Amino acid sequence: MARSKNSPAGSVVRGLAAGAIGTAVMTAGQMAYYKITGAQGSQTPAEVGKRVIEGVLHSSVPEEKMEPLNNAMHWGYGTSWGIAYGLAAGSRRPASDGSVAGGLAFGTAVWGASLIHLPAMGLSPPVWQMPPSSIAPDLGFHLLYGAAVGFAYSALS
Image (cartoon, rainbow, N blue to C red; front, side, top):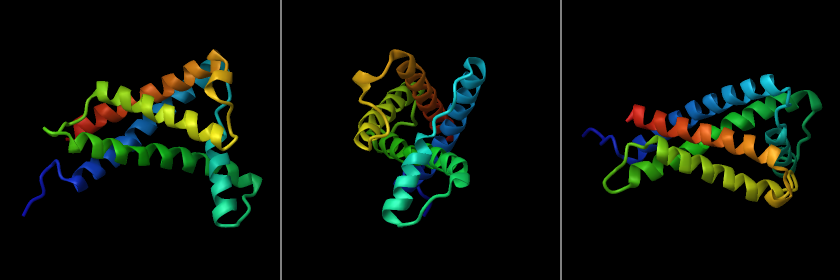
């Protein structure tokens, strides 16, 4: 028996692929922004990974491993959020194939999650203490990510 294109497994697979595509688009946008502005990329993903490795696995992370860890955490985080998008889009009645508009809302939700868990981990100040000059680009990156996830999910459906 063939699986429906809106099966949970199909939604997860499309969501993972869309999450990876969204992460690639977000990364390209970040790289362009950093090149144009001279700003530095965030090392927060590596700090999160380091805390997990040290706290859960009781292993230290040498400094020379921080950049690869940063990349792995960034890609893993963005790709895995695609699962949530896929399940949400695939479980709507009638089932949705995703959309850029839905992706923008999703990107905003992912950004909102970071505004909760990063301050809770002591890795960033609460949003009301952040300068607008740091909020705007970060929100923009997440909107770009969400739009790409929505578009990719729709294209893959």
